[in-house]
Image 1: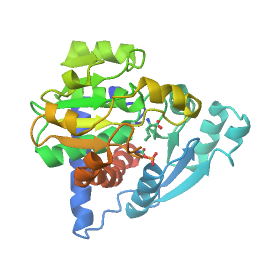
Image 2 (image 1 turned 45 degrees about the vertical axis):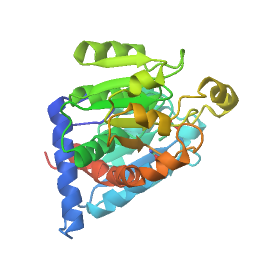
Image 3 (image 1 turned 180 degrees about the vertical axis):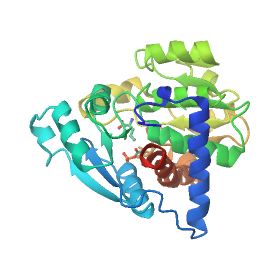
Length: 302
Ligand code: CP
Ligand code: NVA
């Protein structure tokens, strides 16, 4: 694996192999087994948006793998003052062994890969969030033991999370359903692909989407960069919430996941979040193990 630009680029086998490695790294960490698979490697982490989990999991992960991670904020880099991506990519390729980038446009991530000569890892764009979904898949398999026959239901905005979850669910053989308000559907091309390659339902009826679900997932109504639409979105998304009523439509023992940060009382109620805190915080922890697996696959010895 050279890069992780989006989940759609990976085969089912590549995804499963990443998840297996993440499980192994988690086990080894718990047992104090050293695993310096990236000894001496340097990762640049470019952030054009805020982050808690992504930054800390990559930085700590790199340390635990024997490498070094540099936090590169948009405020300090020349890229924030307009230096072209194609120049930044070629310069950073001379210093680093890999780049993780969180930004707005997917094209910027693709361009870094096109003009640079080192592995590029997508740490979230407006289009997708593949690193998060690898941790989500790891958590689902950890709690449910399998992906076979499961239904994953996403409630809320057809955003970066919805796009990546849809791809991740279909690639691992799960059924996918999303309930979102009209006009807030996931990427149309990805929906077409999902319907051609598995079972995928897009509806504005929350109970219909949640019916028989084994995993319920939600994310904020207004993503980073959409702060000005907050009021409009609060109106549009009223009712698109994971709450006890929706939990009743799902299968008994259904999991609840949230990529975090969560807005209690908006996309999820506080009581449902707390009831499923063990799953949601396992999911957050698994960012560390999944991100280590991604770095090893992209930057490790081939
Ligand atoms: N879920 C996630 O990506 O969290 P951060 O924005 O804190 O990195
Ligand atoms: N959809 C959210 C995900 C945050 C991890 C955002 O892009 O802000």
